[in-house]
Length: 187
Image (cartoon, rainbow, N blue to C red; front, side, top):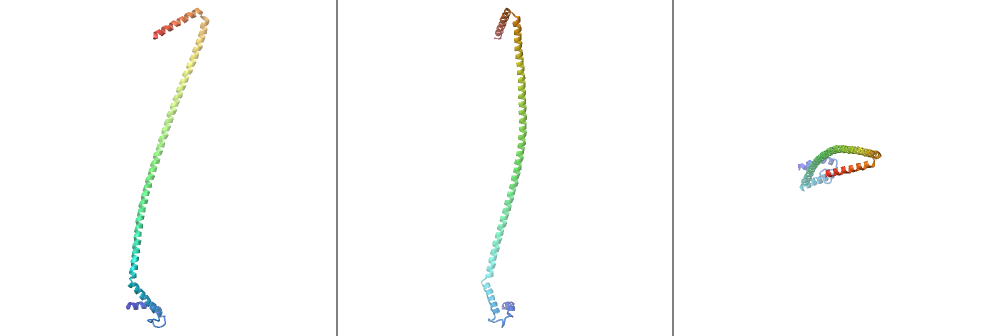
């Protein structure tokens, strides 16, 4: 009862302004105070504060589990990001190694191409020198053959002018005998 009086005193301030006695059913402030106290008592008797506290606890637990799930997902995302970053670094390293290898292969191919070109030039120079030497030898043979032909004609002309036909026949017979001897000696 003391509580009721205490609660009534708390609400008595507006009641002091009302006309008539406070503890009367004609006083609206008193009726509202009684209704409020009955409402609070009903809420306590129906254990509404416990149910509200239970609902709040369940909500707090659900929020805590959602926070735990969010933390777990954040940690998984962080691990996944770290693994992707590690893979990215690995891929970058592989790309650098591939570029270095390709650059080295290109250098090697360029050096090989230079050497091949150099040897091809040397072969062509040698072939050209051989052709020049061969052409010189052919030219010398042609000049020699032409000189021999001219000399033979000139000798023939000189001989035919100085030799009689009897001497010519004797020379032809002598040449035939010499050719026959050489042929039989070679067999």
